[in-house]
Image (cartoon, rainbow, N blue to C red; front, top):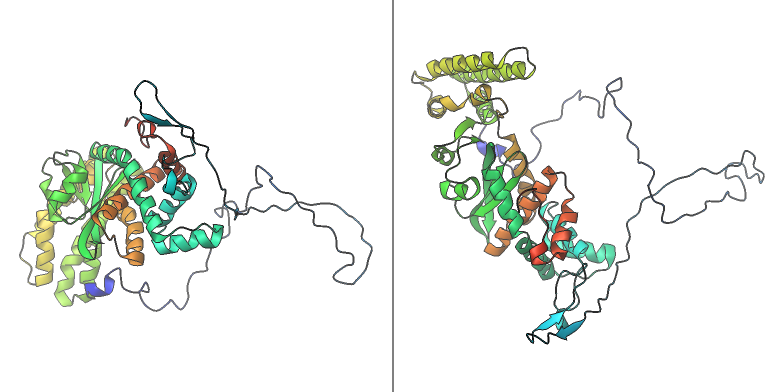
Length: 425
């Protein structure tokens, strides 16, 4: 099957549905777990009575017995916006003669006059979340606020919110990039993007407690060092892209998921003797994953897993050395031979993933957003995209309320802005 049929723009279906699909939902039994239900609200804001009807809706009778009161609960969103007016005190200092004005903690700006009417911090944070995480375009955000809350917000106003939020999150973004560069391991990846309709690349570097994004015109080493750091000496878990090999101080792990996928693709089109090579490669890679599972289950020791890694590397090298008569197999063989020392790093060093799934997951929301609105129109918009995505998804990793954090950043004075990562001040 050709790669064009596997691209992300292709339809989601992989073929016809199965004739005997599995039953939907969780299976009954001891492993079913707790049945889902909505908890009783901790606070009641409104209370209403639901009296009995005058007559029975079934038979029309007018007398009832066993009368009692049960409770039902409901959670609803407020549709009426809150309109605030700040009485800003303005004066002039007698010592220096400079103008001074007051500021309330709920204000996001000191602007007065023609710019005195503004969107509140929670609404601005919601707009950031809707655009950068949930993928709504600026036009849809405008319609969302108008339809649900009656708040007029133009597309240009929504864009200004993104740029303002990104500018105020700049310090946190730099702290996130620094935290990624200090991590024991990094999982980098990249995907296509657009800036003003021209090709660009969205880069991601995922660590255990932070995720950093970068949108750049370049795809290679020059862009990667801005996230990873040229002198990085930890472990890189990647898909085998040649630019990552230039981080010569780092230890490398090639993603086995990509290699197994390539084996399956070769087997879909291979005929006769051409099936032997991808089958043997697939078997060796799957054997390494079984060794990992045995080590993690403590059925074999860490030392035995390292010895098995050396054995697997030796067997893989012997398989790769002979020239393959099939051109497709030979091309795959040369790729494996270049990276053979990086295939089983995860067996030699516990805590290292065998695949780059963390980066793939970090890119997935951006890929969905790209399908909706294609990319960014300006360099400033691309920079804001990278900053805000880094803050939002790092907040998720930190189990922080991302919308609440953005709202606090927007309200804070420049020298008092909150930090997302502990110890980054």
